[in-house]
Amino acid sequence: MRTPEIPRDDWSRVLAEFSATHDGWLVSLDILSPDIGAQPDITDLPLVGVTFEDIRAGTVTISAGRSAMPEITHTIQAPSHIWIERTDAGADAALAIESADGATTILRLRTAALPETVDGIARGPHRNPGSPAGPVR
Image (cartoon, rainbow, N blue to C red; front, side):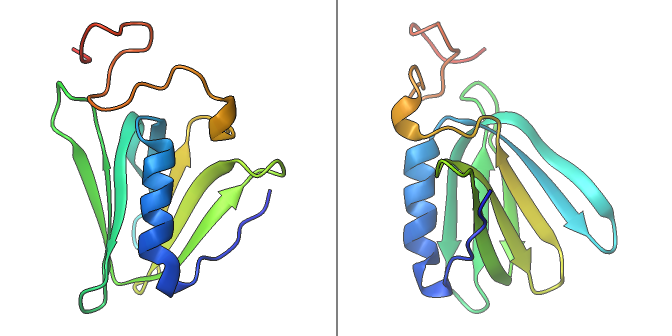
C-alpha cells in the first residue's frame, strides 16, 4: 500500500475526481479521535460525494446513502491533511482526512479495485445491484 499526502492546493480537484470515479461504490467511514476513540459513522452505503470548500479554515464534506433514505453527511471542519491510500496496483482503497483538532476521518472503499476492472456499478440514483429497474427500497 502507498499513502501519498495530497497538497492542499489540489484538494478540490482530487476530491472531485475521487467522487466521480467512486460514485455509488460502497463505503464505510470511521472517526478516530483522542477524545472519543474510534467511532463508526457510515457502514456500507453508496458514496454520493466528497467535497472541499476553502472558506475560512475549510471544510470537507462526505455524503453517502441510498435514494430511498436520507443521505448521511459527515463534515470535517478545518482539515489539515488529506491522504489517499492506494494498493500496490494503484487502486484507491481509502481517504484519510486529519482535522486541526487531531481527529482523523477514514473513508474506506468496500472494495479496492481499479475503476476499469469494475463492472456493474450503478450510476445516478443508487440502485440495487442486479436490479436495473428501480432505486433501493
